[in-house]
Image (tube, rainbow, N blue to C red):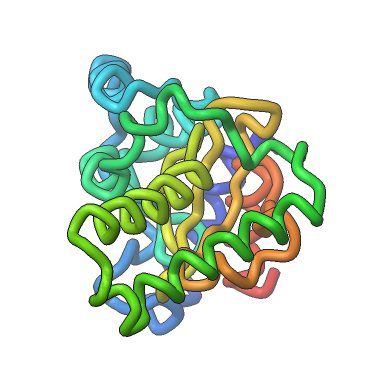
Amino acid sequence: MDYISEIKILAQEGLRRDSMYKIFGANHHKWQFAKPANKRTIQKFEKNMKITLPQSFVRYLTELGNGGAGPDYGIYSLEVMQKRNVFIPQTAQMPVMLDHSMTDEQWADFAKKYEILDDTICSDEFDTKTKEQQENLLHERLNMELALCAGGVFIGTPGCTMNSILMCRGAATGEVFVIDFDYIFTLQSEPYCCGKFEDWIVKKMRKSLEL
C-alpha cells in the first residue's frame, strides 16, 4: 500500500479509537490534516528557506495536508516550520553532519567540545571574561548547534526539548533524525535516525495506535 493511503487510514483509525484525544491531548493534531498546500506555497517556502524539500514530504503536504496528523505531536505546517527553522538560511552553505559519514569517535569529540563550551558559558568563569570573549564563546556554541542541523528542517517534535529533523541535503536526504539540544554533550554516536520519512511516519503512527 502507498504510504499516503496508509497514513490516511491510520489517521481515520486514530480518530475512531482516540475520539477524546487522550493520546496526544486536545491541543494537538486530533488525527486530522490541515488543508493541503499547493506547489506555489511550497516553492515560496523553499526559496525563503534556501532548501529543497524531499518529494516524500512534499507529497504529504500536497496530498494530505499542510501539517496535521503524524508521529507524536504531528507534522508542522509550513508556517510553523518557518518560525521553528529560522536557522536554515544560515546553514545553507554548511557541510552536512547528519549523513552517516562520521565515526563514533568524531561524534564523541564533537560532544566533548560542546560540553566544554557549554560548561564555560554556564560557569562563573564566563562573567570574568571580556564582552568580546563572551560573544566569541556564544557564537562558537551557536555555530556547533547550527552545524548539527545543516541540511535539515524541523518538521515536528517527539516532546520536551527534542526535534524531528528531516534531511534535505546530503547522503541521508529524506531521512528523519531526532535531535535534543539539551543533551548534545552526551552524544557518543550519530543522533538517532528514524529512517526514511515515509517509513518513519507510518511506523510511528502504527505504534501510537499499537497496531
